[in-house]
Length: 303
Image (tube, rainbow, N blue to C red; front, side, top):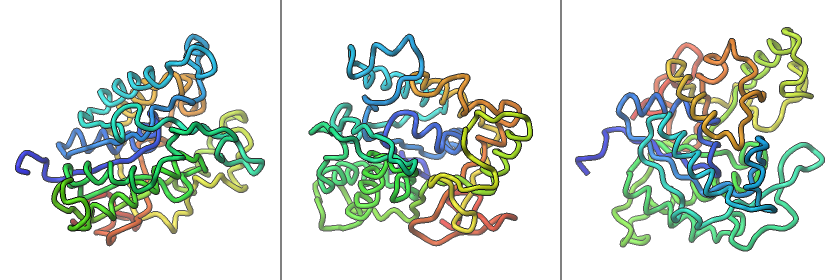
């Protein structure tokens, strides 16, 4: 145990690229500070939407191979963030991307045809037990995953939430699977979030600049998608603006999924503001000391 960093964070995500978009700046900051950062990815994202023409042949309905390609993209993203500990849940290829379709209400739902080995079809206890082994090895003080809706309804995001929450619970039970190591109770669990006020502010700046296509259909003063969180529900914000360049590099490494001229990079003049502040909801544990905004400024606060 002595070779573990003093402070350790474990993140559980569904597909390659989710981690960089969601908490890339936080991961880069903590890695640079010498804290232990472990990423668990639950699928290889075999059914992701390919946004660059030169990689379209990797699509599942054509030559295939997108999952293996995204494995390489993820490795490049982790190198950009300075993260050296990354695992696929159960090993690479254990669970397949479940795919999705869009509901008429604008959120994702399970596809009509889901592969038998898809993560959405995983036995919850089996998948959670795979995470138990990692939790007991890493012994993180902080775990980060999605909310119960997976942000926008993607079945793999929802399943990752379930596996993370149940896995953390099982890992704390001394009599559960003693062969997987000594029990560990994760003190704090967070769900990644996006601040409503900052989202509205960003949209307003885009619209005032004459940009009506980025995040098309979103009104700064109108209803927002379910992945946007009311500020009153936020518990923490990590200021990692000094590491925004690493986050942007990590997102660009996922080139099959994130177009370099797409909406993620539209506000080029405000990249640090847009991507360097990452917000969280507290799902387990007690909120530690807060900053001027009434939010924790460190996920390890109070530990």
